[in-house]
Image 1 (cartoon, helix red, strand yellow):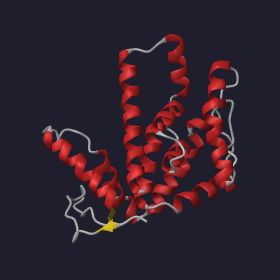
Image 2: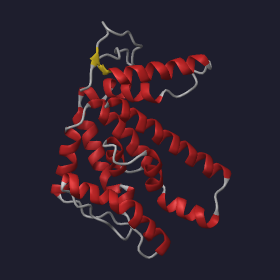
Image 3: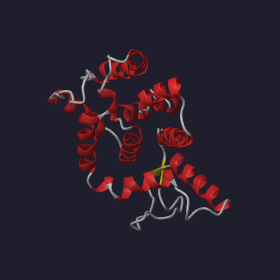
Image 4: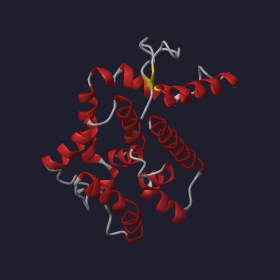
Amino acid sequence: MIHFLSLEENSLMKTPLGRPLENLPSNLIAAIEHEMSQLKQVKLQKNRARPLYQMAAQAIDNIAFNPSLTIIELVGFLKTDTLLYICPTDPAIYQKQQEIWFPIHQWFKDHLGIIIPLSETIAPPALSGAILSGIETYLKSQSIFSLSGIQAATHIAHSLLIAILINESALDADNAFKASLLEELTQNEKWGTDELAQTRQDQILEDLKVIEGYFGVLG
């Protein structure tokens, strides 16, 4: 059971639009306070991202007033989801897709009754009304704070499917990272990677770990 704190119990900063960060899960409040205290200690609060605060503020400033818009955006993202495009013509990549992606597809079949369609070309696979409705129903069951995390994870991983599994604690950040950058990481194994690419990959992994932690404190 999540215990929610009000401003009478805990005083927090406001969102960018001036709304109080109230009625948050108590663990999220503690995590945001810790995030802020760390930034204050290194004197980088104005110049450094505050991801937990940002996701909570996004939920309150934007998602809360019309969650349907966020759900429509996320469902629309599904047709370009990275995990819908397989490459059986490349044995190395296809083997990794079978190992890493197919268990994710199986999760949706087992838990939501959704069979993920796949495309072997750049053309998007056909998404039936039942698939879209199933994903929409799932998203409608989530809190605005979970939707904020799912939205952030979707854009970082280029996959709504990955984002949902992180939210469900069915995929950790390390494996989400491997799934998101599967083709790129497979090529890295063969050809290596340059410094810029490595820096970008490290940032993606760090962001996914932050989001995994965010879902963790939501309970």
